[in-house]
Length: 447
Image (tube, rainbow, N blue to C red):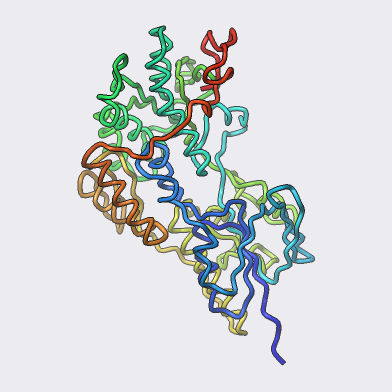
């Protein structure tokens, strides 16, 4: 008599969840993949969506389409809120608030991380992060909307404020976004305005560390700092942001001195933390969490005392592995293989081993830094390597072709075709064309 197929629930449709689901497609299991969004997103290229190079459709793909050929995999749009470890159930919430439960024999946690404001979540409406399509579209409105508001401003101080962009965090996302804003100002928009000079836009990059891209090592970090300086990005290293409001931000330097910077746009690219689901899982299983809330797991990616629960991708804390796409892919692949073997009655004792294939960060057209296979290089060669790496990581043939075409126009003709935004959707206190309040006139509206 045949045993019923094992039930596998995967929480999260990022690289870890998608690779796990695909690996399990030929196993004797029934797979349910949960995600609060209907698409798989390549987060490392969100900044290109925000700055008009690529559309959201070029960096995302519908999960149902990606999984359509895998007949034992079902996709459900829902947000996992907790688990019943003893009863082996995942608790979830549907888009309109209805509750739903999923039983499992194996659970793969691949829910990723979210933006961290280090205990100051009140900054979020003022200083958006860069983790979702919604974030990228919001930042696109703020970047291109700032130039329109500066063009229509009569007060020189207000014009200067709108043309000042403050970015918090000098990791890959902050560096890439800062460079792209300067390229937008100095190349794409330089001939389109009559009252302002877009190239006068200031881009301020703040970070508490000593240098941008510190995780790439001193050589590439210095190279990135040099290229950013040539591009016109103003680096403020050793700076801790102590306050953010609609008019700008306050920063404390190493000497403890506070400085106020007026800026029409503050963008947050510093820090990540695990989603609330991680805390719920830790409470239900007794698992430990690291400082960022990620779940500490064993060498086989399982939680202590719960071999049926595997943690993958950014949500796992293991051997100080970085939160990059390659870790997510490899851990998702491992989790799928482990469950596939066990579902067929085979043992799988191999520990998870991460094979570092390198990292890359885009600075500006023709300039990038790459750390791979113990080699560290940048410049034009690094830029070409960056292009090939990201083409390989994109999901789907159409997305790859679309990205190449978008890059061709952006890099050869200074054209960014994905610049559409609406002023009515700009989060101004009184609306785009309403009578301003006193606080709006004084420059305290939320840009």
